[in-house]
Length: 484
Image (tube, rainbow, N blue to C red; front, side, top):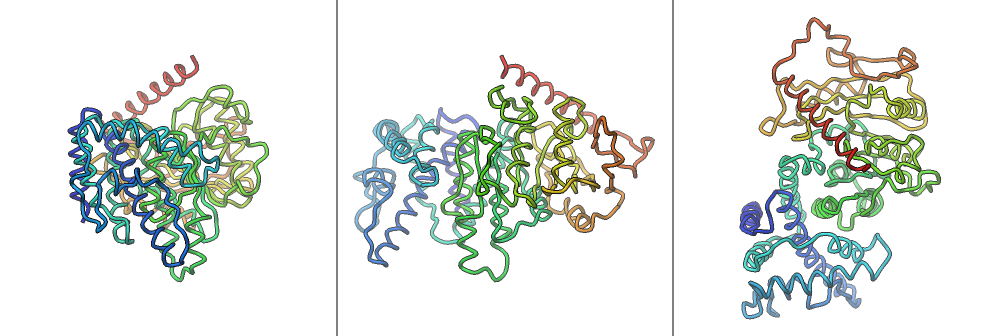
């Protein structure tokens, strides 16, 4: 029903000189979609107040309500062509009146959990890049056709929005920061198995793929009570995100998946003091794909036991500390973490093995993350008991992964099934921690079922390794520039 509308919105965005990439298309359509959602939310809120005979306090002043400025409506709900702004008048209204008004919400409250604060946060950081008032008018008219009133409508919008995020993720290296392949997320969730009543956290939330898929997983359970569904809405999913665009996308994505007021905070998770974490800031389940190859300044590293400029290593420490005792995690990280010989890598492996039961390592093939150029593994662990034995699984989908041949759910079925019993197979094996070299704690993926003589590298695999090496060089250069 809405697919053609989404396509037409993207076509309109491409005509504006201020938008030049899939990141721009997603960013600009996101803030517009958010304001359209607010209008639908206002209508629901007003109806609830009328039914319960309570006074209604609108979130937005009337002059800035969607039906007033975006697509003006008459008292009967029909479009009022006489009041409809376009061209420079519309552009000036958006830039000089609408955005300053929405930005002001941030200063009106310090409660980061409120919708008002989130509105101010979004419009303090996201700019309006649309330069042509006539294009803005076309987009507003299209956006007005979207509806959030039924679960079916929200589901369709969520599917379309996920497709937009995926295109953004495939568009280039920067876009890839926000998108983790959903089949991989679903497999991680099937292994970790979150339960109703547990809290789920992602401190590098990106587009909120882990939280959205966890919501789908839990909401599909049979026999859920009203209390259960209220728990899912309000006290289950928690996330933090440093980057503004990702934060906005995450908010919109969770709303479209049915979580009306997401517990998301726009902040750098790595600034949190880990030395005194209250119990209500620890979680039962942590699912995340922290950024690879980033660099943090010395003042950020200072609070960590293991100091390193590698962002992913700081995040792994953050996740271990944020887990409750007995809590479970599924974390994506570069495969070089398993065997790097630098002090930070060694001591982080030591911390993980001593404080947690690292029961499973899933080795992902090259090409899993489009445009990233790095190989990854997924670490599955439970906090509270040291690791004695690790079960490895080396995923081989039997084809080179790429934009036209992405990872799918069938590729991960065998892994999910074998992991239930930690069974040995040609692709899986166990390693005892007692057998590891104490000076290295090398956890590298070494399938004992494949002899070196049997390994024949194809030209495509060699090209993948070259791409990974190039990506590592770029990361090192980024780290050096960040320290200058």
